[in-house]
Length: 320
Ligand code: G1P
Image 1 (cartoon, rainbow, N blue to C red):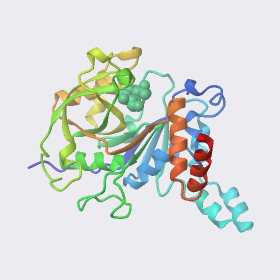
Image 2: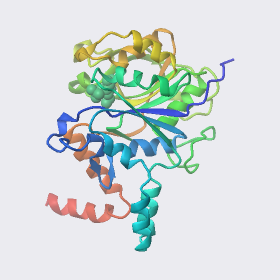
Image 3: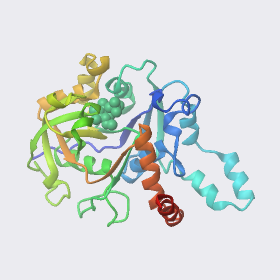
Image 4: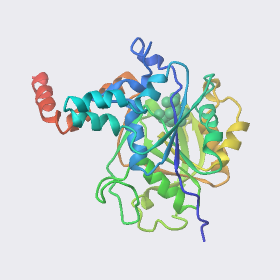
């Protein structure tokens, strides 16, 4: 029988990057605070945490990132200002930004790579499985939830990307789980690429929506050239990992780009047979580059309940 895993309660969000691809916009503002429609980029990931049942978000920050802390802190003066002027809906929006989450902050003082950033959160995470969300990737799932799903949204709403990985971690007795997506050949060198085979669901999860998409990861390569890539399945930026990953990352030497890569730590989990992947069902926006950011703005703007129709009309006219 598969042993029962500890509950996934914490999520690590690495946000120490300098955001050089967005200069000059990011000279004084963290990249994570750039707005997609009406929310800063990082809020999409935090909302995914809330919808996935996460209780504690750990930001791995760097210098000049205090706007992120302020954004998720209480703002009593602003709230009373809005309430006094009868703008209760705006006051509620401000109050509810962080849900009931607990927030912690730790610093990555030197930019040594994603693996190093995750390792910086080791003490705050402790000896339990945890999620990692890359804040510049917005993942809008369209996989329906199922009877076994315990996420906090309405029963028929899509299962959030992180929630799906938590279910896999639970069903496999605490193994790691990552989302992957098919990547066009000319973009393989931007991703961690997996070598994997279809996997049986080891225990539980018989009715789970992801059971036919479950893969066991045998190996991974960070940012390979197209001819060295073991497949076309790239890691999209959502992970649920067992605490052993910290020991592996502590032993990981700089890899691709001279950085300590999370992907290289994942290779050790894969060697232990403790890493699963699932092909993400939904729309991923890599808003970490300018084109992806613009695409996210347009597609999310089109879905906006208040603005969507007007915006669609505007775009239609623009095409003529
Ligand atoms: C990181 C990871 C990579 C992953 C990618 C997804 O790379 O190292 O494995 O595929 O995120 O966006 P980065 O985009 O930070 O270079």
